[in-house]
Length: 138
Ligand code: GDP
Image (cartoon, helix red, strand yellow):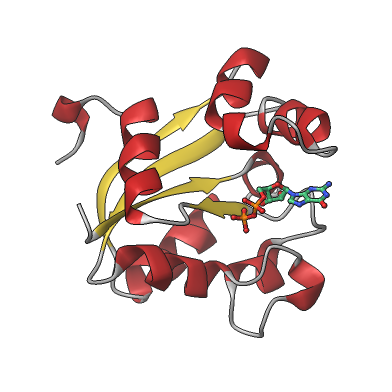
């Protein structure tokens, strides 16, 4: 699965009406969309997704935010998908993200930074399987 990664267009970007612009940027950057859907996570589903961060001080705020509204979950394919998608996203803190990145363009703050991306091939596989069944990956 090394050519697949998992991405989320987070609730802040969905609320701001930038789903279309972000998907355009993703396809312009050469990614092939293998799966995509709009979901509204419950708090429990967000806590399960971010379980690795459960001891962090920002965990309650992060999971509340991620369950505050709809988001778009995606499986994205490209050679070297994990680093390629993280490059397009930019630094976690939009204030530190490079020009031309999605977080620079669409992120508002460290907590509300428009997009998520897997940090390893192993986590990409886990995260895709958390949201998509095999039949939903085309
Ligand atoms: P990412 O891989 O770049 O998304 O960053 P991390 O895996 O380290 O953190 C997951 C998410 O938690 C980030 O995208 C941020 O939205 C949020 N986050 C990380 N660090 C902080 C922090 O110090 N404060 C707050 N409020 N949110 C944070």
